[in-house]
Image (tube, rainbow, N blue to C red; front, top):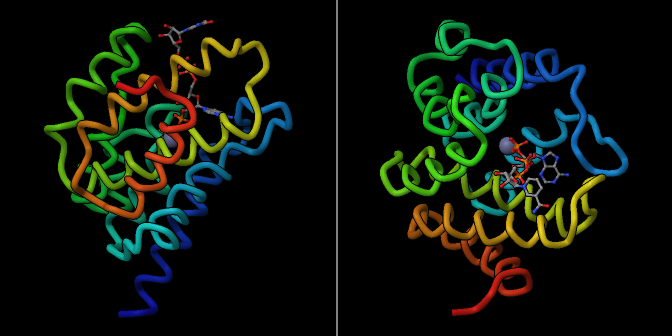
Length: 180
Ligand code: NDP
Ligand code: ZN
């Protein structure tokens, strides 16, 4: 029902807010971390025209396992198998080195589900817009550039999924990546 869906969305936003409560983004303003997952879900709805509840819930939860003590078991119990599966598909294995994690994102992107690709498109769009607005403390322009190039390689594996989101990403890539 409508009531059930709305209840799930708010429970999910509250869960993510509690989990991320001590975290901040890397921007100079040290924005509360929860702005990011909520912003990713908002991009999916307002710009991507994505209204599938499992995708929106997965977007809100997408960094909880990677960045907090949250387990997949907890997500499955509270939000169900499908949401948990999407979150798993967009979660890096933190036992691997940063370089390996970044390489695997490029390698795995073409093989993830359509739902996981939607979350990835919105996640990268949010992060790249953040980077264009303000360079994180300690980041050189070269590092920002490398991040854009890497994000483009990941997104190239997620294409033909959502034209509106891909168009917005391409605007950012045109300004910040080397052209072929
Ligand atoms: P990080 O992975 O450390 O940081 C980027 C991630 O931080 C984003 O993917 C995003 O992830 C999160 N994030 C938080 N706040 C912001 C924000 N304001 N804007 C954008 N993203 C934000 O950085 P790198 O991707 O650079 O990863 C490290 C890699 O960088 C290493 O592999 C190394 O090769 C390279 N490196 C390069 C240096 C250089 O000077 N060239 C120096 C050091 C490392 P989320 O969506 O999960 O929140
Ligand atoms: Zn994210």
